[in-house]
Length: 101
DNA sequence: TCTTTGACTAAAG
DNA sequence: GCTTTAGCCAAAG
Image (cartoon, rainbow, N blue to C red; front, side):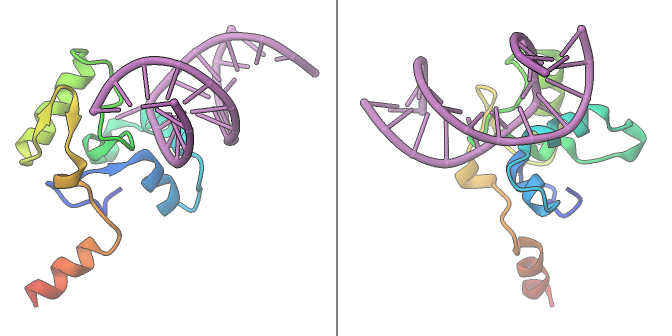
């Protein structure tokens, strides 16, 4: 998850894949729910595969997540992010690095 | 041992 | 774009 740059988002499935656990997106959600907050994971950047926040619209968690994402410049409308604009892809970090140096 | 329940997903209509 | 449907799989009851 730490590979996901601020200002971009990824899906639970992508995280599962990166962890070498294809097909276990739900497990990622469970793990996050259990994760102690002192781990300071960028959990707000993880969304459903269609860009929806995983929490019910209007719930406290959803509002918190929306706030964190917008701080990073990610636009959240109707409990959803436009993946076309913000979805992270493998190799993105490497690409930024090359552009930089 | 079932059965239910999710911070899920892909495909079809 | 939506909703439905069928898979998914570890945990909890």
